[in-house]
Length: 381
Image (cartoon, one colour):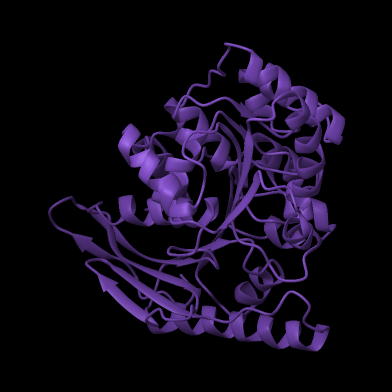
């Protein structure tokens, strides 16, 4: 049990109830698929009688309270973040602060289980284990470990690893992470509410997007890894064939990032950068798009593609995502060359075909039940 306080028994259900620490740098109101995942998970877990309390440890944010309490859920916005260009000593200090806060939170809230987003700190998983933290479940949402060439040895020493996609599970399994600790669990997805034509027109006006022109939509971080530069190059060729189309880019952008700087320099009046959007507005932008494109170099299972599919949109998906390649191969980009992206965009808008994808495994109740089965297996409760 490490520093956990031991389970209490809920007499109404006759089983142990858990105190859980959920540690993730991404949590609403921060945008992004991972933030949406952890928010959905926490909301659904909090409704269960076998969960006593959930403490969410996440990054501090300007203008946000450092602590919030919502029924069973306590949100602590205490984690620091290093600037993208920080020196190694600064990164080391930030990492040490994160490890210390994780351990202090686990101890002070007497938690039984630590569920950690691996984006937070991979090396910290070993640190926590050595310092006597409760059982640790690592949650890997993307393939950053593969792309950055970091060691996944700390994952092998976790009690369990939740994998958001088949390619993540295959990557870890090929690197000696024990198969019996790997759990491929689909991303939970709430079915989006379709907006009315009036709501969509109002959203366009709010964002300064032409009300009548069709548009291609990109939703995600403005980084080179997301293929933003290739998409801008492709749009130039695509717009020659379809000059009435616009390109809408929505998502956070870090100053100095090459992709963001390229967007800033773009002089095409048909290209609009609307910045990071609240999730509800993002869903409206996806629904109103003639085509959604995500030319990312590396993804687990991108939430934006799932949301676009749930809204019945045409979406061009990145290569290497096994679930999408199996379900709708004709809507998966074979490579990320601008000419390939442009040709796929032209073919997609001229076709009447719409991709089909079975969203049943993404039902939030199904997902949360599977996560709880992992909790039970790890704790023996």
